[in-house]
Length: 165
Image (tube, rainbow, N blue to C red):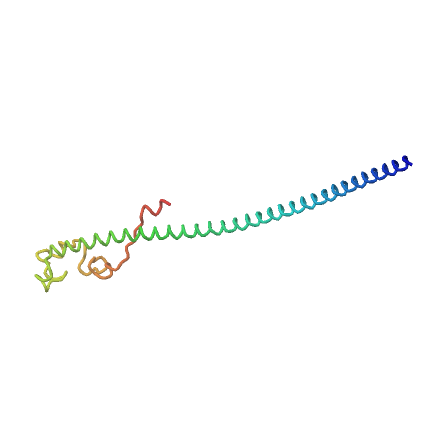
């Protein structure tokens, strides 16, 4: 009888060991499936992140191109305004010089309060018109610097700064 009990105990212990082995194999299989699924999800997240970064790079390149175009347009406008400013500065200098010359002539001819009837063709305070304007013929309106045609002409000037760009 002892041998049957021993044999049944051996069978129970071997079946119990087999059960433990099967449970361990089942756990390993489940863990392996779980790890594979986790790795698949990780690869998917990584691919999605890479796709998002690729899209972001495209958007940033497009935005960068638009900004570069805007900078180019703004630079062109700046250069145009700078050129206009240079011309205006030259015109202002020319007009200031003309004004200064006219003020000097006015001083030489005397003040209007002293000679209220004087004009450029009247009494010139001892200076004849031919002395002030030896190059002007009397009836030549185009060459006369005192007529309105000449005084309203635009002054064209170019600045050396315009060509430095």
